[in-house]
Image 1 (cartoon, helix red, strand yellow):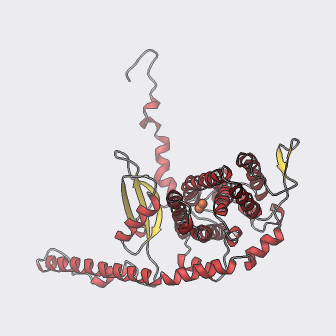
Image 2 (cartoon, protein in one colour):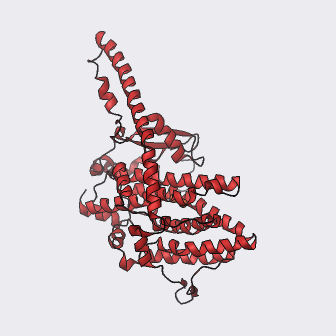
Image 3 (tube, rainbow, N blue to C red):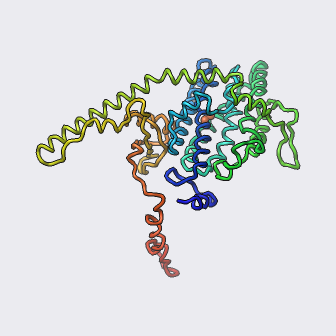
Length: 432
Ligand SMILES: [Fe+2]
Ligand SMILES: [Fe+2]
């Protein structure tokens, strides 16, 4: 595929898939955006995870655990999408841990009270929904598909946050006060999630031209404000902006834009919790190293055992003169990818219900098939999405070459006589 074919696909609002040719700049922009998105999902677990042990009821605790688990899942969907573009997860995580790649700034603010947990979900997950719903139409197919799944889950995050605040709004004066204070704290960080104004955004123009992004920062921020105003009224809470009012001429609310200098300061690492959040993330990664190593060693052992069994069978066949010389068992074991080499990628297929075919759900990284199957269950069927799972090593998938699309599919286009609709029956003839 050439640059002009790529441009034509983008102009026709068609999706680009991972095997398609794409300009380097497009690939790099996607990897940067998807990596920042993935980092934000896993870093975003921290402000809320701190409240799991302090949630005021068992029901709220269960909801919060489910939400934090979802955010981990979103991170994993997205790292897998970045891997379809040739990025290595290890490199992306290194870039996060070393501060070379960023994550959303709101995560660097503290959740001081239980009301902050609700305000964070109502406002920042609400902002994420506005942003991500628009991104579902992104030009890169695997990213768009992951976002559809993410948006479905984000709407639960958003709603449960509103529900938590609504409960507080009907509570004691002290609870209502803590609700107002939390909204005061989270309004600005939520507005800042849409990034700098388009006029000051470094990547906006090319991302819009490539249709990676489908709406500008200013437009999305406005949409978010317009949605929040009636919801705040329902909560009996005041949004902390004296300039906020309906503008009948524009058909939108006027509001004070967030403080971009503060946004830039926080993104650069000088927010109230930046150091703590990154230190925690690095520690979690280091403490998990032995689990990753043990899983990889186990996978290599299993593969070696399997290969030895296979080699034994091959040897017997060979002696009986029915087969070629046995393979080296270690060669098969090497296929699995040992410790330090990075785990292989797996494609996940889910059968939504009996009678339907397995459909591709996404990918994941795992050391072996057993772990891949467990991860697939945790990642892709948290909400009764299916009754059966397949995991297939990505490298085992042989696909048709997008460059040879014509040779594969075009001949069928001039054989319309293969379709029943090519033979309209005469008037009044039925049953054909
Ligand atoms: Fe998320
Ligand atoms: Fe969320």
